[in-house]
Amino acid sequence: MASSGFVAAIDETLCTCCTICEEACMFGAIRVNGDVSLRWSACMGCGVCVGQCPAGALSLVRDMKKGLPLDLLTLAREELPRASA
Image 1 (spheres, rainbow, N blue to C red):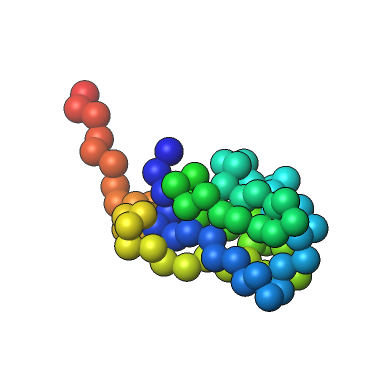
Image 2 (tube, rainbow, N blue to C red; image 1 turned 90 degrees about the vertical axis):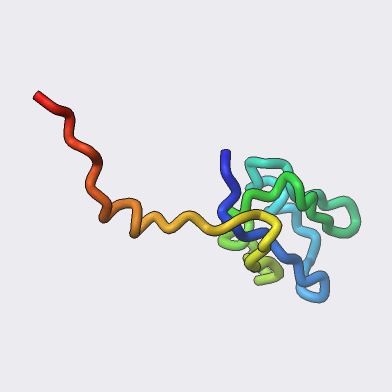
């Protein structure tokens, strides 16, 4: 699985350690145990945690180390090669 080119960022001043993000993360990148931590290598930048955080403590930030974001709109516009008859 390829990274999105983004990574989750946690604003610890807003985080309430409710564990909703930890439960939502299908990659096991977020751990809540009195405080919250992110395993950078496991985060795929999918944004599920961001959408689930009731405190607004999570956001996605561009991370050059994760590669270029995949431009799905450009890919969708490209025609696939047609099979020859």
